[in-house]
Image 1: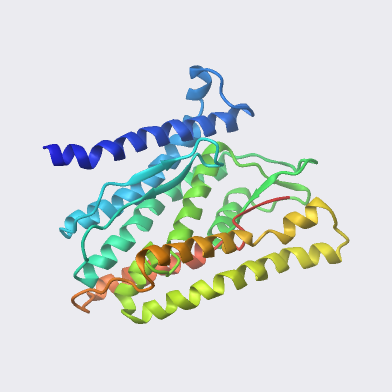
Image 2: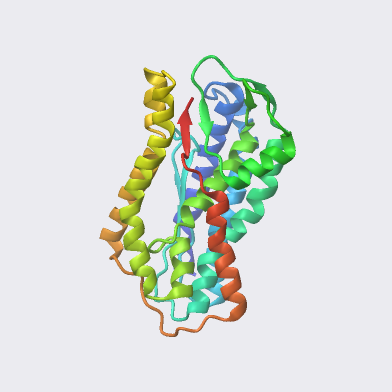
Length: 306
């Protein structure tokens, strides 16, 4: 009993703090200023509850898949940051022993993104459907990254948006969009990210080479995305802050490359091996479909000023 308390005490505290943090951020979205009372803080549920539902589904997808395969996995450790755009940096789960079979590795890696998407999709559909289309503001504003899936949903639910107008995401819509972003980031076929686990289960040690190449490619991707936004703006005569915003559009990928490089310094450059190379046919289908989600969710620029 003492061991169970030790395992779950801190994770439950962090979950509670992350709920409070996302309530705080969500209330600020609704009010236009930080909440100053408990009544105002409660207004943040329209952002906090859907966002935490997505993140909890993702993390507990990993957790229960690990328990199903009798792998020693920790509870999720959430990271509350009340002054960050989303109120949290997500969560991490520690796998405390070697995953011996590729079937188990694929299940554990894929369970998080698939469970998170099962919640994120209805949230983003409802969020887009209830978000207004309004004239673009004259002052600089934040523009969310747009993937193929997001653009498809936007076209389906809102139809053609006139020039000079755009969708203004409600807090609930922003929570659904954040779920798509988190899933996209985790599906990168790198190291011990979810996508790395799934890819290693499918192709084995060749995945280590993919990870090394991907780490070298991400800074180049940052330059390509920034050039794709910055050069047309410059040629159109845009200068000043707006040009700076466009030139910085791809820098999220450079930051993420640094984070992944630090991760390899901590965990080693290679994915931990498994003891068998067998992957069932059904799991292969699930694995490739899971990785293909990255294409649908890929956002060239995660978020930028416009």
